[in-house]
Amino acid sequence: AGLRAATADIETNGVLTLLEKIHVPARDAGVLVEISVRPGMNVTKEMLLAKQDDTEAQTTSDQARTELANAQRLARNDLKVQLARKSHELAAAELKRAEDAAERFSKSVSQSEIERLQLATEQADLQIFQARFDLKTAQLAVETHQAALRLAEHRLKKRAIHAPSSGVVVEVLKQPGEWVEPGETVVRIVRMDRLRVEGFLSAEQATSKLVGQPANVSIKHQADEPLAIEGEVTFVSPEIHPVNGMVRVWVEIENSESMLRPGLQATIKIPR
Image 1 (cartoon, rainbow, N blue to C red):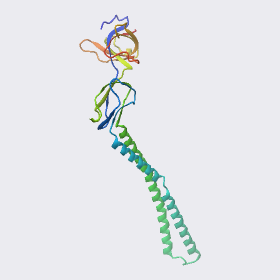
Image 2: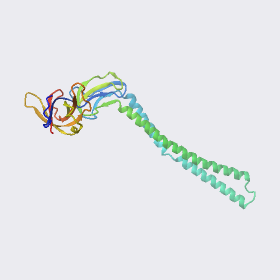
Image 3: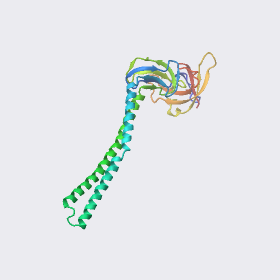
Image 4: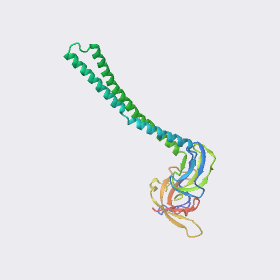
């Protein structure tokens, strides 16, 4: 790339490349039942690309939701606590009457009867603690079932393959009916709304201060006049090529109308 004198603008040749190339994988093992896109389609972020058989995952999710609803019903049920309190009140009242009677009329109530009523009162008191403990356990079980439902729903969502970002589908590697493993690429997407121009500068010119600087890019689009686009320097490599002493530089440009394609030749000019 012919470079101008140090006092002039920095200029070099470059080529348009893709900014993002995304291999969208399956996130779970299973059979593909639907492919919602085809090569050449524009997709937006979170758009459905493909679906795997989710019968088992859906059943597990439904079961977890039912179990959570039942756990929540039990956690709201404090009837055992109320019953234990009533039993304690009754036992305490019986003990109080027996002690009053024994105090007023000597030997009207035996000591063994008073001890029996005292034991019954203590047991009723313990039943309150047990009922409260059981209710707290039921409330904690709700959290366990909530976590189980979140996990089941997560596994269900993994059966649907969505676009991680906007772009253009360039390849569909699997078809409905095929088995896929986790991590296996199903669809390949490239981002076209923003491209990168890759070029090389001499080590003297390629300083880190260039990052963030505006750059003028002239692209040989067709037989017409070169297309002028404003861009920004986004990367200056810290490495110098050991043979030619050049440094890799990236300039990003907008391509919102997808007029430009990777592979086109371009000239980069960075004003001093």
